[in-house]
Image 1 (cartoon, rainbow, N blue to C red):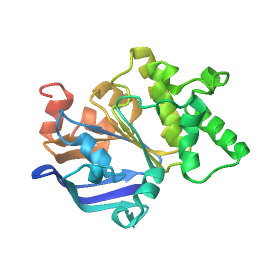
Image 2: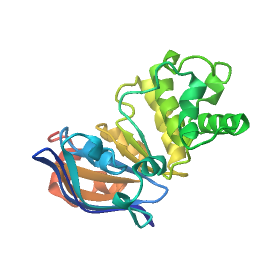
Image 3: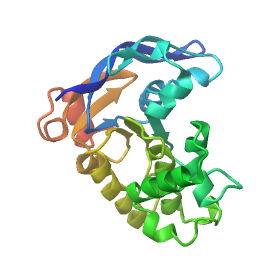
Image 4: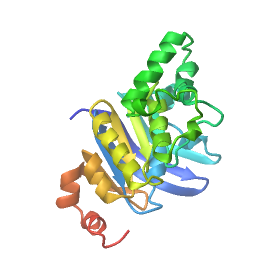
Length: 250
C-alpha cells in the first residue's frame, strides 16, 4: 500500500525534555492508522508534529523529517499544511459565538471563499460527510455549542473536512463521549478511512481494532512496532507489544 506520509528519525522536545526518539514509520494512504500506548508515551505529541502544531508550543522543537506526498513539511507554509492535514482534538472545540453554519464555513472563508453559493455547497457537503446534516439542516443558525457532545465532535470533523484535507488527525476523539455518540463517530471513521488518510490516537484498544487498518505501538517516546492491526493485536512481533495489548501493563 502506498504511503501518504513518511516520518524519518523524528525527535521532539518540550524545552529540555525529550519526548520522541528517532521515530521512523510510514503512514499508508487512504487507510486508518491507530497510535496506541500508555499515557505519556508521546502519542499526542507525534500527532501534533504531523501538521506542525507542536512547534507552536513555546520552547518546543522538532528534529527529523516528515514528508507529505514526498514534500518536506518544514519547507511548506504552516497554514497550508494544516489545511492539507486537518486535526480534531480530544475535547469538542466548536468556535464559541458562531453558528453551526459559520463553524463549518470558517475554514472556507480562511481560504478566500466568499460566494454564498460556494459556502453553502461546502458546508452542506462537509456536514453530510460528517454524518450530521440530517440532524442540523433546520438549525444551521443555532450556536455550535448548542449541540450535544457527540454532535459537537462531528461538527469539528465537518469543519476539518470542509477544506478538503488529504489527511485527518484525531486525538482521542471519543474519550469525552458517551457510548452512543462514540458508536456514531466510529461508524463515521469507518467511512472516512476509505476516502482520507486517517491517523487516530486512542487509549481504547478495542476501538483501535474496530476503526483502524494499521496500528503503531509507542512506548516511552519510541516506536516499538507497527503493522496491520490484526497482526499487532493477535500475533505481535515484540513481547512488549504483546504485554500491552493483553493488558499486562498500561
